[in-house]
Amino acid sequence: MSSNSVVELKGSMYTFLSLKLHSGDLSAVNEALAEKVQQAPGFFSNTPIVVDLTAIEDKPDVDAKGLLAAIRDHKLVPIVASVHNRDGDLARDIDLPLVEARDRNTGNDTKPAAQASKKTSTESAESASDPVFDDDVASGDQTQNTGASVDSSKESAETGDGAADNNAGSDADREQSATGSHSMDPIDLAMSGAEVEYVVKRPKLVTRPVRSGQQVYARDTDLVVLGQIGAGAEIIADNNIHVYGPLRGRALCGVTGNSEARIFCQSLEAELVSVAGNFKVLEEIPEHLHGKPAQIWFSDDKLHIEPL
Image 1: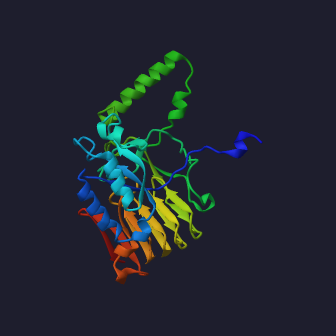
Image 2: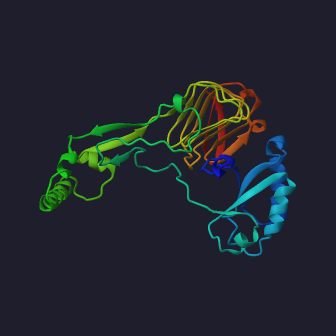
Image 3: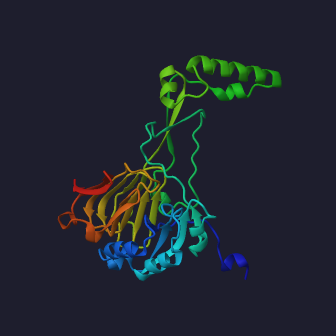
């Protein structure tokens, strides 16, 4: 039997809760964890978590072993620690695998969500680790061109080094003359009359129910689900989530840090809803909204849930 048939090693994506510690005071951590876990003890029991140490890793005399013990006392399962400095004292003492924390896109960028491109052809590539329902996905990129049409591929096909150099120089001069700069944002380019290609990724569309144990992820776009989300299922999107059937599993939008993303559903029965890492479990959702159309969004450092 070949080794390839016994084991398979590949990249996959999983969603874990992140526990960010803002204090190294063991009594304060214990008290805060007890208050949080008692809201939904069944949900948090034996839940794997990422321990985010970035806010306390530079503080002196933090008891790493005591912190892990406190977390485990509340039946949470720390599996990895997130840090900025792998060589810090706390990182060395925490006795967990380490991952480097990265800054997230806040979603407050004032530039257009679409990106400018000089390419005249659309490239579409789906990640090998993207989850299920490829046949239900409206995949690919939608392009819109503004301004005059320019066929740059013909110019690049000129033969001879001298002709190519001359063309390159004249192209640069023409571009600088038209735009007034070698580097301009898409809005300035469009106003100058230059060609701008906007790439808009279509929403990911799922027409089937998402059943328990399944996960769907819409990368860099919205997720639209026409069927129900079963208990134990998980739907994830970098932008907004729209569910037209009952939402009974977990729904996480803005997972790359887009705090302006929202969740819209026709029947709110979710085990967990999250916007940019800020979540509520079913027990925290107002009872008068259970089974009702609702929207969930984040503002003023608070997760809001209101009827549609």
